[in-house]
Length: 348
Ligand SMILES: Cc1cc2nc3c(=O)[nH]c(=O)nc-3n(C[C@H](O)[C@H](O)[C@H](O)COP(=O)(O)O)c2cc1C
Image (spheres, rainbow, N blue to C red):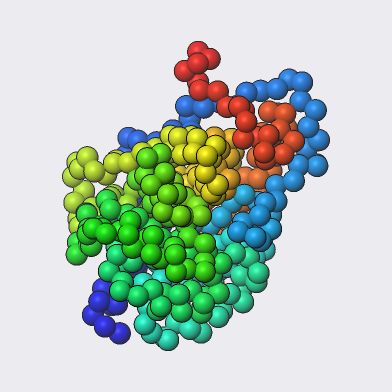
């Protein structure tokens, strides 16, 4: 193991430990879902037992419009968590995001583990993950594609995390040339490419730029849940007031504004960042997300309640989503995305 890999793995370990706590949450900013209410329909005719929540995710039919966000890997605990989440994803028939694969570039050390993950996940979509800060430095993407083949990834997710890199000790806050690199990657890739943030959100303008470069999907990963500035500040033992802790565009705002681009662009919109309750899930979908996703809350549920806990959590969320669809006269997900929310400021 090189010094660099050792450093990455030790950082991942610290990230995992910190994200098991609530210390890493945004302090004053929220994802903004609380500003919305559903439009109650007293005249609903929806047959709740006939609501079908299944949806295609890049060609594969999954049971819910929900995926487990990219988290971890590399360390033995991280690999164990991924394996457990792969079994959860298979049981629920939902996609699973893997954490950054950077640590596995150029080595065969993790091949056996990747085989185990694919076998545990059965046929559900797996999302490989790499940082924008890494692709910008790559002269060739051959190694990355080889790695994605080993993982049998369905999709490649590239995370753009300028705030985290900026505050991270030895972070790589140099994204010069990122758009050109992404464009090149998209042209050469046989995998659909999604771009995500990690908790600071993606604006409508950035989303349009990414779509013009050819991305197949955008995960806004907005502000209001896990603060990655917070994570890095805690790692740096900087607990004092720091306004960057709460930096970012709230998730609900990102979903609402980026969804407007669907009129002229074909892409998958994923709503995430502080999606921690069934109502957050439902509001993400009603605001225009095709899929919604969560990270930290899933990790915490796994640690506290085990795999059955995560399965129950997600099943319960979608039972509530069905109830909300019933009460808003939405027989299917398509109609749920149309004018089912009201901003609270407009009704009081
Ligand atoms: C322990 C942990 C590790 C993470 N590692 C990655 C990663 O390797 N790549 C990535 O794109 N996002 C990573 N994330 C960010 C999440 O995918 C997500 O975008 C972010 O935490 C906001 O979602 P949340 O509020 O539901 O946690 C990680 C999140 C957690 C909790």
